[in-house]
Length: 68
Image (cartoon, rainbow, N blue to C red; front, side):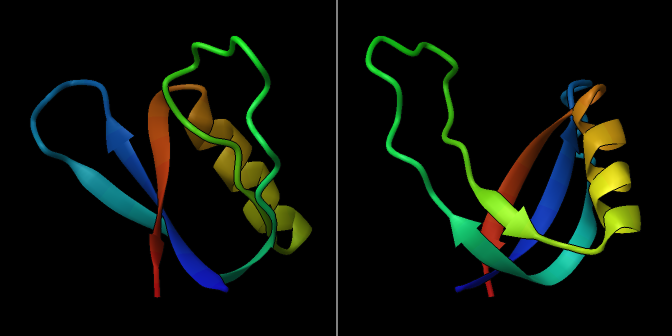
């Protein structure tokens, strides 16, 4: 599957930006028992520079994926 990775700010203003388009989903692991993270882990395969951008964005925004 291919997805777009979107960052949504925590400000509640509805701001969202697409960080990566058409990236390949490598894995969707089963959730850990008792996990209360409020989301799911989706492992994507992207170039190193994109991975750095995604990690940086995740420190200040919530990331989501949309199916392409």
